[in-house]
Length: 169
Picture: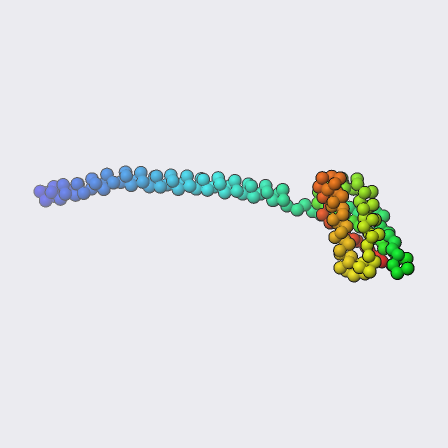
């Protein structure tokens, strides 16, 4: 029995320090858990704000579907080429993405038509015989309409001028 009591006394002091360290260990684990949860919460809030800004930004910069506004009737201009009378007929469509801006541009269709008639009639007939010449004329028409809309409305409104039909005779 003495041996049991001596063994119990020796075991008791050893058990006591491990019990004293147990609450300290629990406090440390609790602090680590608290820090990890705070870091996770911070990350979630920051990434949520980034996602919100990413989803709102594309709405502003995303391209709207293309809208087309034909300029009727087709343009017919004449050229004097080598002493011979030549004609060009062009069907033009304006392409834009903002319906309100395109409607505002349609209100200025007489100005647009005048600008395009002047441009088409000053074109060189020989250059229009090639695909590159026709594309150059289309680009010039786009720039002319955009600058006109910039003057009248304060923004270009028209993304492109398209030729849906072009006949040289």
